[in-house]
Image: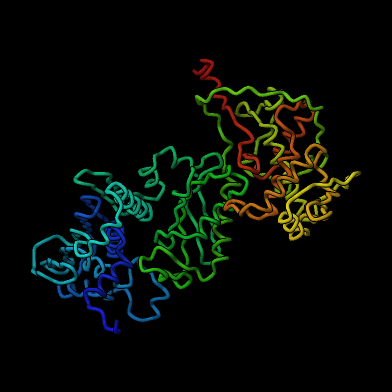
Length: 562
């Protein structure tokens, strides 16, 4: 085929595909325009999941009558005046594509009036062509109705999901912007039924409570951090309050909801060792940076961004979340459940001896959310330590608690140099596949720093000559197997480094086990060491180390409440 210029209608439809992927895309663009117009009230009505009809009305600044047709022209905008403005964008929309893209693939009615004009304007467009324009009486603001989305591009309709799925996407976008702009009254209706009406709130936390419930909003930890011109504020969940997916890792950059890979990674790194595998926290963070430090022009839909100094932003977000967790996270409170009881088997292993290494203060000072001084009372089924605190009864999982103590101790020692190693009187010969021998060779330096001295001994065998000093004899082979799995496994988002993963599993194998009998002195040593930990609430794998039974709860259970 010869090269030729495409028809304007086809060009418009192709361009629209970059901006308007689905009904939620239309809602997003129209709501962003309303916010840029200074609206204090935004009303969204949806029919048929957005395919049949979308209506977005606001009380913003409106569009002057002479400029209404121009607003629907491609690359027409009031938000940029020069190329320099493109690198310090302060509005949600700026490319001048949204209205033109929507009008190219739908039947659109625009009714608008600025406060300074006595009459408004109604404009009707079908498939990108103006079919009617006339004045009308209406209050200040703008109302845009989008009907029969993709009526002239039927192939696009085949790629839309069912009405329920499209509705959920619209709900998601509206709830996100309702969070980002709590001073704006948002109303959402589907097929004539009101989904929510969120009056203006004084601060985002009240909006969080309206959307997610008061219990969640009150449980979240406040985040506040500033470094230079970068400010991070918002809320994250404490350890023990987690989800099975990343759906509620929510970030706003200069008021724009963004879906970025780096920002969730920064928060997840702050939760390192505080969450079980496959679980994720709640996070609602507002990040303010100078406009010239962020590029929002990466994607036509403006959901992806690029920071000029991504490492700097990563550090500020990670530090902000880490500080909130360390300084304000509460000790988990016991809540009854209907889970069936599971008997514990008491081990016949000899009594465990507490290493001197863990009686030292771990590498971080205590914080307001650390454990209070506890008086050890005893042990249940050789697995849980009972202790009394100033505000109630405490149960400690001895294995999880010892893992946490060992992890912080070894991490502090690693900052000073290699970990203590214990040479084996009789080196162990272990058969491993050739590819695993190669992995061991590639990581020889790191393994030696952690206390493992391993040498090749034939094509399928290695010789283990030394191990970390804290490992008992029976823990050596399980620890070595963990090491091989860690070297083979892919990096997980909440684990900071391969070294951290290896240290974590060393501690799992070295820690006292459930079912091992401890005497009162050993329990006291363990509790004192846990009290000094910077993050005493979970083991390095994210399981709880301690549960608190408040005095008031005990009194109620025994009918002693006044």
